[in-house]
Length: 143
Image (cartoon, rainbow, N blue to C red; front, side, top):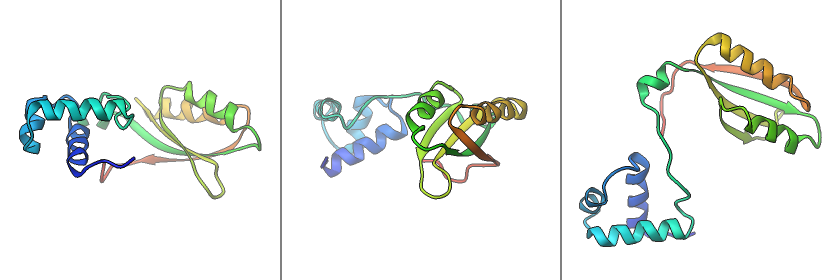
């Protein structure tokens, strides 16, 4: 989908703060408020903007223990394993990857012991052959 430079700038501003008032967006973009509102509605209608979400504060996020969990699955078990993983609310994102592992899950828990139980739960799913996890010590860049 091709979008204009102004729409790209608008998306960037909304990515920083999706609750920014239209008047503020218009001022930042040098456009009228009605033009910005119309652009947002068009981006939503065209499916460029699929929705809005909550971004958690840095102070809340810093209290969580996060990890990458690399997952190897048995052949033909991707749909079942993906469905079971999607039901685990502590999994923030799940990616298909290449290499010796099939999936990588980014998970977050309130404690190391909770994280340990979560990793065990993932490893016990039918169709999961093995896991390899790495705890995230700090996040250097987040966009």
